[in-house]
Image: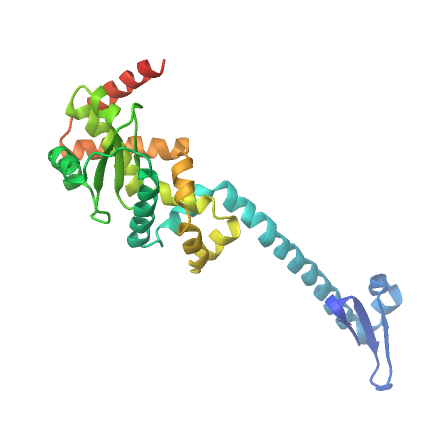
Length: 270
């Protein structure tokens, strides 16, 4: 009889029923190709089994290497897809909490319009967009900050900050609503939280894919700097443009406003 054994099956053991107290072994695998052993009828089958075992062992090693190296590499290159799957497991309350804490940090040293006054001014405009949203997962809050740059930005959970210069440069309601629709789609598509997930590290993300959200939760709890200092990818911006246009159509708002506004913004930047 011949069989594989030892650590990682590195040894080949030979035994014979007439000599039960004796076993011969070697680590020289080429012995399995010996023609004399191959011609021995009693040992031929066990030699073939040993060879198959050897091949299966190497196949297992290759498979493990593939899982350890290739799968994370694939996930890294397709992080947009992976982050989307993981983000769907994040409760809306976590996003709201992160958005509130990030907004509180941003407010330090900034001059914001009083919340009630901003709400009274913006509600008549933004209500048409909120009503047209496909879901009510988020509660939107709009804020106005005194800032000379033409900009607005969205935080996870529904907080949207509008720079005063954006309002001053908008020639009509449609232009402002076009920008706000774009920002709301960043929230709906979870682009902010997906940026945070992308920065979490591939193995934390893999754990979240299999239900272990503790690592993602730890990252989210301290993710405000990531949100305040990162920008969206071209893909995320394109998604927000496309879905924002759809939202404008659903709300009955002329979509030309967003086009004319970006023309104004381009001229301003030039």
